[in-house]
Image (cartoon, rainbow, N blue to C red; front, side, top):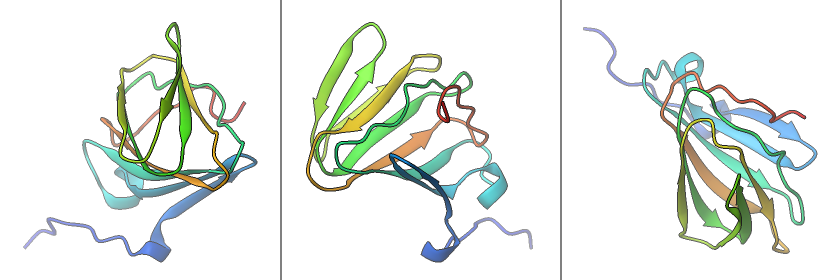
Length: 123
């Protein structure tokens, strides 16, 4: 019988570290065999921001799990977001987040592609 699920234990998440925080990946094509989405958690350090970037091949949904952030959308400016707030960002829209709080901000991030592409993230 073919396998119809992939379980990722917390210690199996793929973690990328940056000066501004971390990305923890739980599901995507390479990691879990997902075929239509990428799921992760972004941790933003206090008073830090990830670089303005965009995703040419997918839309993104960002949900604030904890903390207070401001999120930038190209052409619209910065929006305050608190725990429980969500934003959906279309493909090719430049955006980024900054933590305006005193503690780490935890953000659930989901993408409409199992092979998320990012332009500008490591700049």
